[in-house]
Length: 122
Image (cartoon, rainbow, N blue to C red; front, side, top):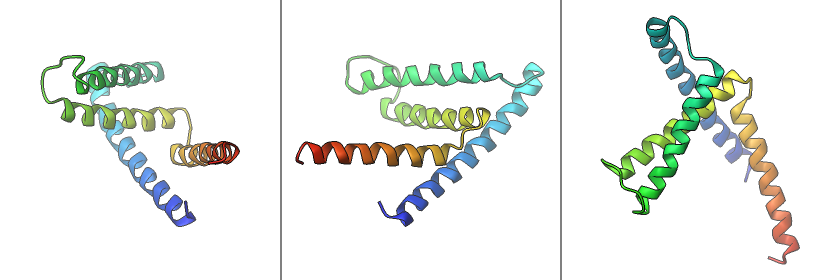
């Protein structure tokens, strides 16, 4: 991947991160009014794991091994996007620069796979 492509991909993640945090700020306003406080980090983590687990059921539904009411494809798109949102929110609360972490992780994994493929004679 060229540096320009890597930068453009990271820029897209920066924009997604910013948007996710704006939506989270709106949720915090609602939580403050309803609960008198905002969700804790453990509550946020449970929200994420709940949605991530539901993605598993939706994958089963997409494979026609689990029934759900409604449009499976639409619900899968929604839950996958929501899980991505949760990742940005959790990363922010844990002081992780998600666009940078993602870029660095993909570079490391990609380089490792290139070495593996070379070693395999591919």
